[in-house]
Length: 292
Image (cartoon, rainbow, N blue to C red):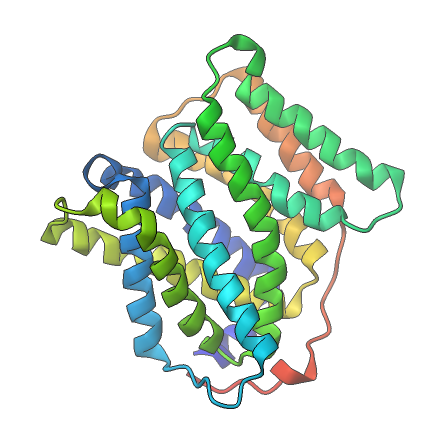
């Protein structure tokens, strides 16, 4: 399965993850009233962890401390990031939450640059986010923006950590370690929200959502980041605010204003312009990937 995925163009895996993560976020809102955003994350990640462990049992013996630390850090980052993102989606339109969160990978795309032109792209994205959130109107959900901003910081870290784990763990072995850790971390706030409200229908829905995220999303991103630079990946992620807005319209009936459409367009433009990247040279440590 993994060998077949390695033959798929890396950019298409990134696009697949974009669509899957936005669909998962939109469909997850149906569970918020019952188990809350954090409870939804915990149930999704727990189901995803069981799926990954069924597909591949990780081998920890012989791993270096640096490898295990990277895997644990990625798992913790994934759990907290997902809780923060769905908490923001509960308070903000999906497209707006995604646009704010996208500031994370946008920063990754321009980090270390000495070009004044490339440094202007984050400023353009910030203008777009201001148009989306309208802080001057007095009706802005500050907590929702804070959640999305926290998710942005962690998304940037997630990209760097995913590439590191993908380089050191073959196939989906890294995910069979990181997703159970993410589920355990999300349980801290997820279990109290979901306790007493879990039904068979909610469990079944959580399993279905888990197939979208974490299974499809994180597997696609891990495989894509093995062959793309972080700049190239961050540029592809520029599509995410636009996709989030479109799915918000189609599934959640969240119709944006003209100002919000302009704001989303500015964020997408900033992401596309922030970095150009190409094919990444795959490290020797991840060159031989077993078929799972």
